[in-house]
Length: 155
Ligand SMILES: [Fe+2]
Image (tube, rainbow, N blue to C red; front, side, top):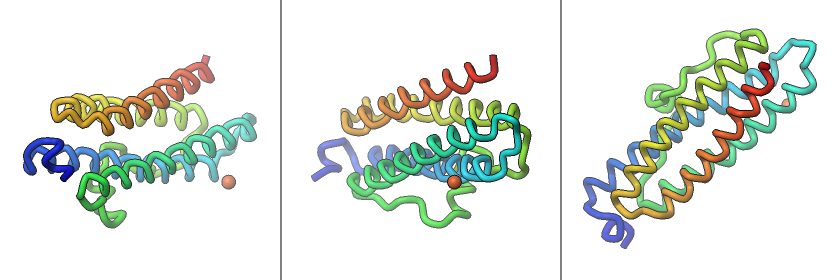
């Protein structure tokens, strides 16, 4: 029984709640990446059109992995885009900025996602949920690499 393995039902629900907030944030982040991929107009179009595609494909995989982890932990995923928007720590895209602003916005969003992931990692470790720790550790490594690459493109 998964709940018995991870601690009390109440504590476990809190962990899943934070995972659902992360899932909601990734759904908003994914949509922003697609909007940037489609609407970019810049002399570096071909490079960043592809960079944003790589990033939204990565986000799509993480969304699926997170959702299935939540299901494994005997809970339901966030339901509906409106609920995801309400829960997300990442701000929705409301306009099409220039490339430099797109990159700055994405770095800021990745920092928010990483901060949230570090908090969940700590929470998961208190319940000895090593599967969730491992999952978030991988997410964090990917984010740190993406932030490094995006920052390097601004030099
Ligand atoms: Fe495309």
